[in-house]
Image (tube, rainbow, N blue to C red; front, side, top):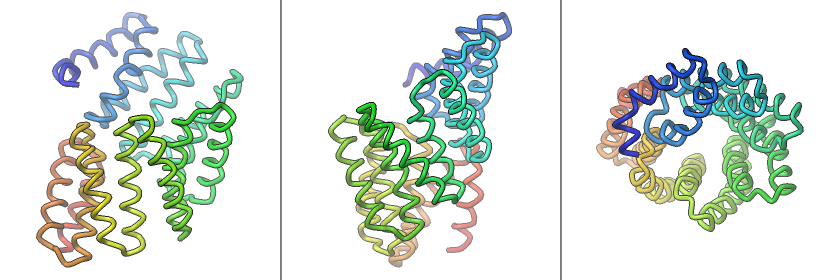
Length: 274
């Protein structure tokens, strides 16, 4: 990751230059190679622009397989930046292309479901994620199963189906740990914390969020780290530990402002409300 950080400006320039000189294979593949780095360290408009370049290159090539891959990546980039409606549109385009190719649609359905959760369209999200789980079982794709389970849980929680939310997260956590995926484990721990926060069980929320924060810090997952800090801040505020809440919101604000993320506005509001 440190090498990517050092060479980031050059790598972005290489994406643009490849597209400009007609090296469209490089122009679509390089942003895909960089996806994990973008996700962990730079989930910003740079990722969106690189992904848009990749989609355009895939379309110029007439490569539908590449188009589906790059559309999903663009959808992820937009979602990380909080542009959920546009992310939903791109993921639906990816689903359409995948179906035309006769490819399995499970991962597209998972991404669509995740967007719908973020948009507050919980019943629709559950429907899409149930379909993703069916596809995962059909293809024996345990990673897709784990992600679909952790994505469906917030929809259950929002509908006050807490037992189903916690059950889904416990299943997902077991799979991620079996796979040795610290990233997946951290995502689930965050969602467990949020679920317990919704139930006003603040000590459990702190317990799970603290574990998630340690993993995010080890992985260098900056946006998720900020999200976890916000969970901890809300939990601390609710149990009367206002000074600790302020510290965690301030840490989250620094990260979000550094990333140029729109959630920084909400955190400023939280701090003003103390």
